[in-house]
Each structure stands twice: as C-alpha cells, then as structure tokens.
Length: 441
Ligand code: HEM
Image (cartoon, rainbow, N blue to C red; front, side):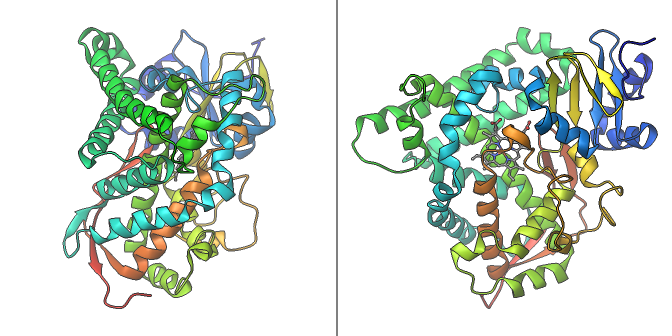
C-alpha cells in the first residue's frame, strides 16, 4: 500500500505536458486541472516527490493558520528573490522571520498607519494633477508609479533627487523582471549564471543598497525625527538583546518593503479602474455614496472597501502562494511527507462557483452583505504571515479611489487587457480613457 495518500493528479508524463502549458497560460492550465481532478490535485517531476496544488479554502486555512508551524515558505521564491534583495521579512523563515516580524509589526499598527493618511493623500493629490486625460492611456505604469511614490514618501520620507528615485524605481523593476524570468525558466538557471545576468542584477541590487545606505547614514547622523518607518526601523530594539538591527539588516528590510509594497497595490488599483470603467453604474453609485468624505471616513468606508475587495477577488494581486511542509502531514484524507510543496491557488478559489454566486460578475455589494468572507477570501494571505502592509494598502487604495472618482471619469476601450500571472497578477495593456469631471464632490 502506498505510504502517502496524495490528492489525485498527473503522472510524470502528464506533469511534463502540463508544465509546458503552465508556462504559456498558467491561470487557464491550473483551472483546467481543478476541473479535471477537483479542488486539490498533485503533480510530479519524477525526482522530488509530488507537489500539491489546492484552492480548497479549508486546506489553505490549515496550511496558513491552523498548522502553520509545520510550513515554511518554499525556496522557489525566497531564494531567487533573496539573493538580490537579502534576507528580510518576505524572504526569511523560522525564528529569524519571527524576530523580524515582531520588530517591524509595530510600524504597521493601524494607529501608525493612520498617522500616514495625510502624506498619502498629498502624494495622491499631486499624482492626480499629472494624470494624462482625454486620450487612451495604459493605466498600469501610472498606478505602479503612484504606489511607488506613496511608499517612498510615507514610509521613508526620503529626500533624494527625483533622478535618483527614478533610478531606484528602475532598478527594483529590473530586478523583479529578472527574478520572474529566472523562476519561470528554471532550465535556464545555468545560463543566467554563466552569461553574467545574475551578476549584473546583483550589481544593480548593490547600487540600490548604496543609494539607500546613503539615506540611512544621513538619517543616523542628523538629529531630526521624521516619525516614519525608517525612524522606527532605526530605533527598534530586539526584546532579547536590547540591540538594534545592523545597517545591512535595515537595508534588507527597506528593499523588501519597496518591492512588496508597491507592485501589488499598483496591480489592484489598475484592475479596480478597469472594472469601474466597464461598470459605469457601479462607478456612479460609488460616487454618490462617497460625497464629501473626510480622510478618516474614507479609509474603511464600506462601499470603497467593497469595491476594492471585489476587485481583489476577481484579480488577486497575489494570485498564488506556496509553502513547504517540514514534517509529514495530513489533511482531510490526504497525506504527504515533509518537504512537500503546497501551492495555494487563491485566484481559483476567488472565482469558484462553490463559494461565490455568479463568480465572474463584478458585484461589490456581495461584500456589503453581512457574511463572513475571511475563510474564502485571501487577498492578503492569512495566519501569522498575513501581509504586514494590509491596512496600509487598504488605506492607500481607498484614498486614491475616492479622490479619483470625484475628479475624473474613466471609460473602457475595445482593447482587451491581459492578465500576466507572474509573481503577482500583473495587468497588461489596460487601456482606458480618463477625463477630468467638471464638478468635484
Ligand atoms: C493590494 C496590496 C497588497 C497585496 C494584495 C498584498 C498581498 C500580500 C500577500 C498575499 C502576502 C503573503 C504572502 C504569503 O503568504 O506567501 C503579503 C506579504 C507581505 N506584504 Fe503585502 N500585499 C499588499 C501590499 C503591501 C504593502 C503596501 C506592503 C508594505 C508597505 C506589503 C508588505 C508585505 C510584506 C513585508 C510581506 C511579508 C510578510 C511576512 O512574511 O511576514 N504588502 N502581501
């Protein structure tokens, strides 16, 4: 009798055929596999045991929360990203991760985030004055820039020349692009090393660190307090030793917050504008419900939150995540050894008819009805590794959306955007027409 009861799935040849399809169209292939085998299924490369993929919400909850002690993030992303951006919250595991999380968490306490609303709103206001109007525009680069500016201004209050900020932004995007290519083409890893592309990207990461190191050194030397996250990272002390982070640790965490904190938000905002442009009645209703809101009432406003949540349901920026089991484990009749990778397919769950009525329809009101959704809705992950920036991101998106809908109109164009399922679900060619409205609310 087999020692482990894996979920049903592909044999070696099926896995191989499917892997080729996954590279071409990951979302469709994963959804087809669920159709064929059920919410949890397994694949094998014939060497490293079976890997499990699941969109079952209880299984996801089990891995992320109930038995989280038995799961680490897999090396697939953490190592590939970590070799450029270092060992910080997003890329570490175990005791080191927990120590960093405890140290940094207070900087994202809702009260702390509240202190940032003003500067967030100013950054958004300045950005809106630069929005190109009266023509079709590709919205994603714009939203990505906004999200980057918000991170720069609110978290690090960095006083750098705009050319240096642009360089930092470019380096971060280029490293991300390379990491994505590297993850999606594991068979070319040797070539990336050999041809010098890994070295080239490490040099870029070093340049980003040099820029940020300058900021940290200047901040340490000065007396002024900015009360931003950088001050908090510099002042924080580990409970056990009473010591602070080293300069290199601080640089790791800054780079990680830059990376984790802007692309996801940029994606979510782009998809939200796309959905509103295609649902003018929803856009109008959002406008009517959010007239003359103060900043404090904007953040957490039920209608704004519902629209953002519905957008992240249909287009979860983090469309998949993974964990690896440390010890043998079992769930609901399945069992598997330590070392098994489990991919958590949030995109599939968020669009599953088993849990959502008319799952492909954009209906923000589903989030207004009194109903517990947290067990079937994972835009920010779950358990102890829940996104540390979730309150920050929700505040930023609500403030943006409220200002945007009152100052602008947005219309759809016949161009169909594409979902690029990379590390995040990146929108491609979301071409919309934006016009300034005559009356502002
Ligand atoms: C719409 C915006 C965002 C989405 C959808 C999002 C989503 C996520 C998800 C799903 C995770 C968990 C990944 C996993 O379990 O494997 C995560 C982790 C993380 N996020 Fe976010 N995120 C967003 C914005 C932000 C922002 C604004 C910041 C910081 C400024 C941030 C910083 C982080 C960090 C540091 C982690 C790692 C936390 C840990 O492992 O302890 N995120 N995010």
